[in-house]
Length: 140
Image 1: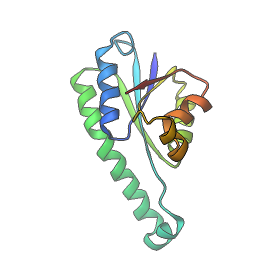
Image 2: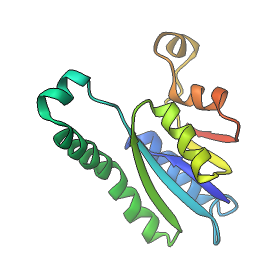
Image 3: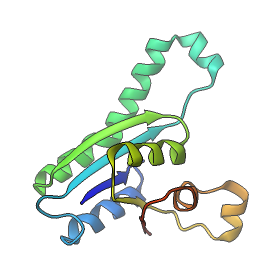
Image 4: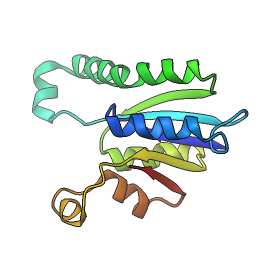
């Protein structure tokens, strides 16, 4: 099975990763994990002031900060994985990556906000579940 793991560097990502590793039926020999990080875009004005190259470097560095500890963890557990990153809307980019990778499952940690929190601030997990056409496993 090919699994896309949404990675934002939070404790919720760590919980989702631990869940995957603990359940060999999801992630064992022959399965592949695609660890994917989405960086929010900087405002156009900032990009103009700093330059496209500096902003691109910033996004790469921030993604590496999230992805490198996960890479070390997955190597220790001898799991097959790849990493990737994008800049933009988290839900949009995660769904695009899952489709592009032909993932059979998206795994992501969720903050577990209640209904009022979702109504006020939105939820990446909620958008991935409702807008996607593949199974999504949310780990709280």
